[in-house]
Image (cartoon, rainbow, N blue to C red; front, side, top):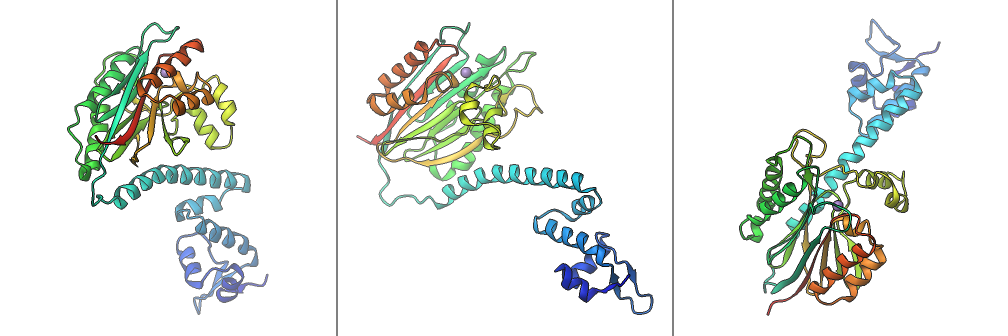
Length: 353
Ligand code: MN
C-alpha cells in the first residue's frame, strides 16, 4: 500500500499539516506509520474519509472529544450523534436568541430628549366560566402593572395570586435599572409560588407587563398570551411554553393540529411549587417601546384556546373602551361553553393628559 506524506495527505484532506499533527496528538487521526528516522508522519489513502469527517465535524463546531466518539461509531450511530448534537445547539441558540433580543433592545434604547408623555388606560376581568369548580386565574391591572396568571394543581389559585402579589410589591420602575428590577420581580414571583403549600404539584403561568412610562417590560412563562395591536395589525408577542408549540416549532405539528391536540395544555414551563422540575425554568423577558395608539391584550388560555382567533381580533380591534373589550372577550368565551377559567387585560397607550 502506497502511503502518503503529510504534505500530500494534507492537500487531499484539506487539513493543514498543523491540524493533522494536532489530530494525531489527540488520537483523532493517527498516521498509518511514523518514519522512525525522520519522524515524518505517513498516512494511508483509506484514512482520507476519516480525516474529512473530522474536518466537517470541526466546521460544525463539535468539540474534539465528541468528534473522537463520533468517528469511532458505525455510520448509523454517528448520524444519530450528529443529530443529537445539532438539536442541542439549536435549543441553546434559541434560548440565547431571546436574551440577545432583550439585550439589544435594552442597550440601544436612548432616553428621549423630550420624554415621551404616555399613559395607559386599562381594564382587567377574570371569570370562572361554566365548567370549573373554582377560578384559579388572576387578571390584574393598575397604572404600573398588567398581568394574567393561570394557576394549576390543587393550590393553583394560591399560586397565581402569589405570583401577582409579588409583582405588585415591586417598587416604581426607574427606567435605567430595568434589568435588576425585572430579575428581582421574577425571582420574587418564583419564590412566592415555591412557598405555596400542597403535596401535589401546583403552579401558575405568568404573563405580565411592567410599565415605565414609555416602555413595557414583558415577563412571560407558560401558555397565557400577550398580543399587541399596532397600526391595524395584531401580533402575538409571546410564545406558548407548551409541548405542542415546541412540536410546531420543530415542524412536527401544524398550528391547526396543535389547537386540537389532546395534550395541548401540557406546559413545558411555569412557576411551580416543586423545585428541580422542568417547570422551574427561566421566563422570557422582553422590552417593548410603547407608542401612542398601541393596544395590549393579555389573556389566559381560557380565552385563546376557546374563542376563534378572528373573533378575538374583531373585538380587540373594534371595541374602543378597554372596559367594554374585556367584558366582550369574556362573554365570547362563555358563549363557547366557558370550559376553562377566562381572564383578560386590555390596555391602551395614549398621550398623557
Ligand atoms: Mn387555563
